[in-house]
Length: 319
Image: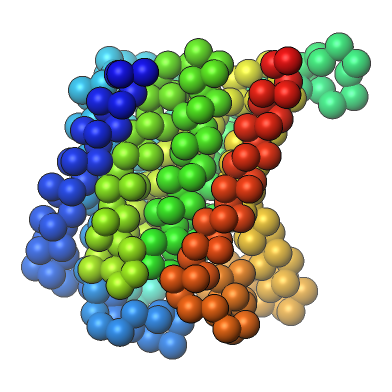
């Protein structure tokens, strides 16, 4: 336990050190988010918070774990996820759009790198088996399932990044759940990585809470989404139990539900499902009269309820 506490403190302190540097770097490179109709902030805001989280994560991981095997795949994939987000943020700060296809292909590449290093969904629990049997996937299906999950998580975290502190807080809650589950399952590496994510997101919230002095940008949301997807594949999904399969889905229940609702709504209205609009849950809560801060805390509460449900499933299954 002392080991986890130490790495948590280290990762949080590193973000506190690197985030002010990220602010200055963002201004120097001109990677700034300009206010618009869809963006409620009042002034141009630096977009490179994801850089501070990436550097902090890499240092913490190298200190805490041997750099081999699965960890190499996670770090390489994280760099790629960050890079495609950085390119998107750079282009947007110039008043242009990178386009959905290049972003998607970059995300797929990051997930493929992860899968090629052995971090894959190899099987799922057979829900129709009375003895809890497993359904094993062929290599092709294993890669496909992993890519779909990791790319999906990257996008749902990106969709959550619409208010100060929202994506970082939701990611922190989800990572806390994955850390507890991995710890209970004696998955030391996955628990350590999840604790590092908790540390960097909590540390980043010091600067990202309302009114935010810096945003994580697409580089940050891609990076965090990739890590949450990778940790769940390398941890909970490896468990040969139904609970191990359900826990990551519940831990990310709020962004999954919000994304599913908006994809269905946009498709039904004849719009591209990936096209940003003002129909997310947090947008609706604000239209119903909640302030930005109240909306974020309410979303945190819902996310905590999903996470508690995941933990109840876990502990009930171990009785």
